[in-house]
Image (tube, rainbow, N blue to C red; front, side, top):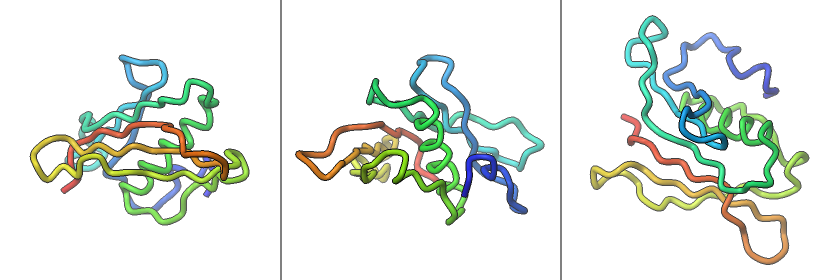
Length: 125
């Protein structure tokens, strides 16, 4: 998938994103409750922790998260751009009534993985 293909699909999305009104390096994850006719409601946040990450790369990562939430299997390939593996660790799966928390890390093959971003959101139905 290429970034311009993000919205190209015959299926109406359940999730979308937008820049967060609170932080410059954060995005809101939104969910449509009755298709695109109704305004999307915030259900989570994706916060970039790596202050050196290119904002365009951060947005591509958010696009991949939203695409995965929408059930799409074709994601933007970022390996050539990041030169690292993107990993994640579930901190809270949301079954206890608290928001889901997923820590994304980057691993370049040396040393230990580094925290990259934190996703917090309501557990999808």
